[in-house]
Amino acid sequence: MKHALSILICLLLLHWQSALAAEPLPPELIKKTNVAAAPNKIQGPLQCAAFSPYVGNLSPDNGPAPSRELIDQLLDKLVKETPFRCIMTYGVTGGLEYTFAAAEARHLKVISIIWLDKDIAANTKSIESGIDVAKAFPNTIVKLSCGSEVRTRHGYEFDGEITRCIDDLHKAGVTQPITTIDTWWEWCDRKTPCKPTIFAKKVDWIGANIFPWWENKHADLYPCTTASQAANFHIARLKDLRKTYRKKDVIVTEFGWPSGPKGKSEKNIHTKQQCGIASKKNQLLVVNQTFKQLAKQKWSGVVFEAFEENWKPSNEGNFGKYWGLCQGKPPYSCQKGLAIK
View 1 (cartoon, rainbow, N blue to C red):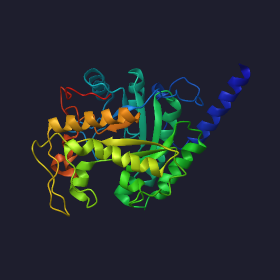
View 2: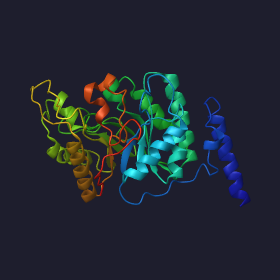
View 3: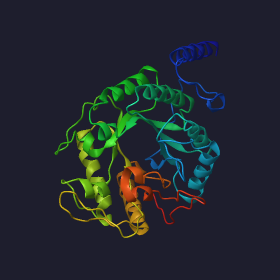
View 4: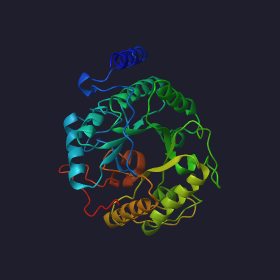
């Protein structure tokens, strides 16, 4: 016992020295746990919902952060009205770090994304906080990602930041599997047939976002996928990636379909086709069929997203705020009939 205690003290001292420059987690969020403890093994595939608490008038770009009370309220609604017992989160700073304590209290598993962007200092803070929460919640945070769609947003400009994040997490002794999440096209190195990227040997798993809805607007390779075809599209892209990354676990980390504006569609910029109709019925069809096919394969998946976000149209047009399975305003009611197995 004394030997184990000495090891624990040494590990804590090393961790504190490396994190002096970081803004520490609030004391009440740090679990009294062995920071070197390995996370529980996952029993079976993960069926998760992407969780962002920027509902109502909140925006990640400006204004106040989501309160703890709001995060609690949203997670309670998700647990009560949907079958999801796993979430994927999009940040570890600015109040979002409370999400992990809230998730653990509700016995939810978490895929945690360390947000990376242009601000290098902010990236450093996120990486340091990501290390802290990964060690504080080893039984709740089951997987980590260094960034989300960094290449999609910035090309190859910040590949070094992704690499720095992955390396820092490994050096800090983080035990959870690590990746960087991006679109299936980026994981195919923007090639067909699919080819591995420079991150192939650095990551422990592959997190791929697959959205036939946006392919219908922007792609010339797959310009026309209807709601009834979407699940097959998701599985086909996953099979391509699994052939390319044979020794890695491959997860669809975002998929979904907008519920509105009802009856509307996007026009493909290359073919001028309009394929795919937004509606609650089609959203439910895509989500349920995809989870059904994932279950047959015993693969994990993350639906995008749990709650509607009203700030999204500024980035994604009229369809941006309709991806949530639950409303983005009180009483935050969720879609009925969700079946994830």
